Image 1 (cartoon, rainbow, N blue to C red):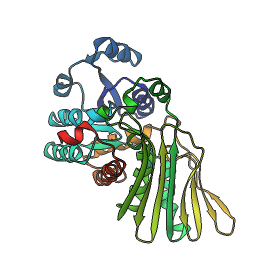
Image 2: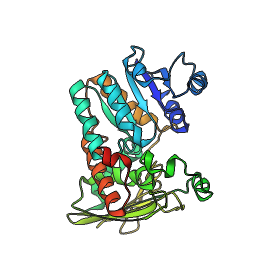
Image 3: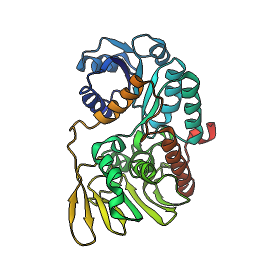
Image 4: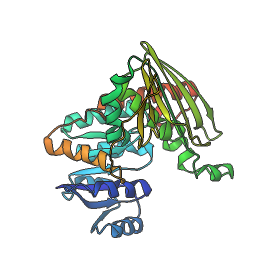
Length: 329
């Protein structure tokens, strides 16, 4: 068994636990929250006896082997480093850090203490993304990657009423690029590596974070076009354009239907059966790494996370989005 603690008692943590519970080696043994009431309430839902309100105490305890971190982006680095210094493996929600400088410190700590550090981005570990990877050659020379993820945030209504919640607060390293755009960027990096050029545009809210934006990324022989938003919706699928056909992905953040439309009109369905609680796949990958004594995932590698963070940093620089952690780092 791999004994897990969780940091964060929100909906994403519940979704992770639903997925992870399908794995026979997963065991939830501890819950952290800043307040005892929240920790106890959340732990009660999952039959967990041990709760913590002090992060350092949880990191030093012998009741967990690993931790899943789902706190605001701005806390990821410091919390992950605390656990890794105490020999705990870390699965950290995306974006894994506020900026590249923070992430470099996380990588250094992981290597010094010989523990697994992995970004918890589910889509690149799902069977349907692997179907894209394995069938990409069928569309011939790739000329364009297009990804769109635009989802109106329920917290935007509060923002318009004058209440700035975490999702639109630069103090928490938030915004549409960090929270939504990364779902478009990470698969690009996993498929095609590091771009040779980046152009970014975005609408920056008065709070200081981007509400929506777009990226144009240059590669040898191809480009990538990315659109993201937390203040509008879009129903567009994502596509990879090759000279012999195109791969259509229904939802880049959680691909469920994937197909090739060949130039002659033929359609090949690449879709694979997947577990509905699809955060299972990141839990499975992470647990397998621990069990096999490996320190990095092939898809959600530290290198892929580092390239993605480079893109996020440069895009923010061009859009004029700054976080307090940029100065602190």
